[in-house]
Each structure stands twice: as C-alpha cells, then as structure tokens.
Image 1: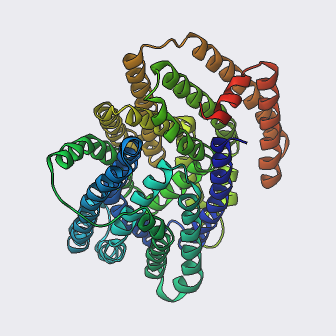
Image 2: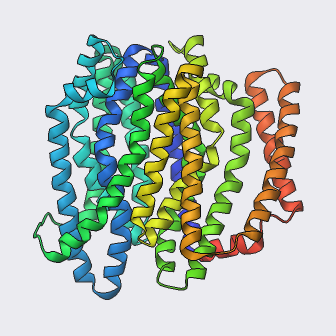
Length: 496
C-alpha cells in the first residue's frame, strides 16, 4: 500500500474517532443547553478566538508547507532557520491577539452580537476572556501541524482533536451541572491545552526555537503571507456575518446555526478533509514538475471529492430533519430548537460538495503561490454571503442565512476553478462529461431514496434504510457507467 493511501486511511480512521467524539460533544451541549440564550452566548464567544487564530493558522498552514518543503530540498539547516524566524513572528502575533482579545472582550462581544441582552453580553465577555489563551496554543499547533504534514506525518495532527473532544465531554458531564456554561468553556480551554502538550514535543524535535531576527529575506517572505491572512479573515468573517445576523433573529438562532453547521461538516471532516490533507503535499510536489501533472491532480481531486460528497448530500436532503432529531433532540433540546436547526441544516446541505471543493481549490492555488487570487475569491464569497444574508434572513429567517452561505460557497468555487483554468488553460471536455454522468446517477439515487423514505415511517429505520438504498444504487450505477476510472484509484495510491 502506498504512503499516500496509508496516510489517507490513518487520517480517516482518526477523523472518524474524532468526529464521533465531536458528535457526542455537540449532542451533550444540545442536551444540556439546547438553543437557549446561554448556548447562543457560548457559541458566539467560542468563535471570537477562532477568528483571531484563523488568519494566523491558515497563513502558517498554507505558507509553511510549500516554503519549508522548498527550503528543505536545498538546505535543511536553512529550512529550520527560516521556520524558526517565520514561526516566531506568528507566535508573537498570537500573543498580541490573545492580549487584545482579553482586554477588549466586552467591546468585541458587543460588536459581534448586537442582538444580545445586557446579561448575555456580560457572560459573553467572561467566556471570551477564558478562551483568549487558545489563540497562542492553536498557533503553536498550527506550526507543528505544518511541519509534520510537510514531512507527510499525519498521525499526531489527526489524533489531537479526538483528545480535545474527550476533555470537552468530561467538562460537560462533570462541570456544567455546577458551573454551567463557564464549566463548559473551561473544558474547551483544557482540551486545547492538551492538544498543545501532545504536539509540542514534535515541534521541539524539529529544531523549532523562538527566534526573531528581521532580515530582508524574512520581510519578503512575510509579505507573501498578507493575501493568505486576508483570505483567511474573509473566510472566517462568513461565520461572523452568520452569527451577527442570527443574533438578531429568534432566541437560540446562534446555537441552532452552529449545531446545523457542525452536523453538515461531519461527512466533510470524516472523508473529504483527510483526502484534501494528503493531497496538499503532493500538489506542492507537482508544482516543481510539469503543469499538466498538477492540473490532472487538481481535476482528479475535485472529481473524487464530488463523487464522495453527493450520496451524503442526498441523504441529508431526504432525511435531514430526522438526522437532526436523532442527533440532538434530547434533554432541553425541544421541538422549537429542532425546527430552527433543521431549517439551517437543510440549506447548508444543498451545497455540501462545494464546502470541501472550496478548501481543495484554495490549497491548489496556495500550492502554486497564487495567494492574491485566493484572497479575491474569498472576498467575493464574503460580499455575496453578507448581501444575501441580510436579504434572505428577513424572508426565511435562519434558513436564509444558511442559504446565503451555500450560494456564496458555490460562487467561490466557480471563481477558484475559473482562475485555475485561466492560469493553465486546461481542457474540461472529458471532465465535464464525467460530472454530467454523476449528476444523472445522483438523480436516480435520490429518487430511489425518496421512494424508500416515503415507504418507511420509523425515524431511525428510515435513515438507515434510505442510506443503504442511496449508497447501493449510487455505487452500482457508478460502476456500471464506468464513471470511476482505474487511473483515479491507481494514481491516488501512487500520489500522482
């Protein structure tokens, strides 16, 4: 078995474990806090340090892998030195963001949640201060992950999220009863700290040390990160827009859109994210070869993601309400919370394949150092999302916010694809024909699933039966239609 296929298998297994624990975490949060005002505050406070970190983390992940791999080809000592200098700059930046978040927590939460009450704003500021140190810890982990991925070591980065989820689950069970949402927040901080403890030794072993010495070369390299940071901010601001608007809707809308988003992302994280992760170093390697090899890998990656995502999307659209009910409806999560979450879940699910394809195409542009093009794509997506969210939220409420996100995701993918096509001017005739076949097969699989769903009234039995029928019909038609070529699997195993 090739290293690429083995890595995909390891990441997938660990992702399944992590996501099962993550599902348990979200289900417990829903059971204990539902879509209450307190839950809204927690999810709003939880995203604030992530906004601050995402800009740094994405710049590290998208920039360090290609730069470190390129430097390492010529001089390992130079690669380590450059890593130390660039990484140190980002860590000190994270320290600054963490202090800023802690000091101005009250103002930040007021800006992001204009629809919150005075009590919610006060609680949100407290939770934001507790979570502020996670920015520093996550930055250390991002550098470690970038170095490990560049060496095609995927085990530790894939394992650490599972450990974090365990700590959050323990906090919910043992701390929430006595300390409420503050206990849950302490659990999140503890989980991130344990992730840091797990990965930090590998970072030290790589020779990383905090060392900042500004040189013309360092300044030149840092300038490359500006569009990456901007792109990451634009991406994260989509979530901010969603939460700002939902904070002005019915109570519990912030929590509901978070539950829906997490549930939609499960198949993406389980199958497609590992695929994207193992493809990225291979994409970077292809940039030093012929452009044709790079483009073939991009098209192959897009196609595999699409093929994998579609049956999950069909099941979500057919059985979405039952899936949400099975996942969350227990404890204080009642019928009103179910309707809110289901409305957002349905409109998120409409664009499921594009969630993963966007990340893959972003990585493809990063691999060829087209950072500004990626930034423009994310900016366009944000503008579309913000405009449509304001318009649609007044018409269909929380579902309109989710639909706006889905539309912006589709438009971002189209822009990214056209950008790559312009750069390399590659043919899409055969590629589009295969996609057309997949669409026809998807319609047949959806109809078979619809008939099955209509025939079985029991909720869990309906989900299981519909899933089996959809996957069987879909897989059989893919095989009969010769849609998946032997080269797709062979080249993936070889990492080509």
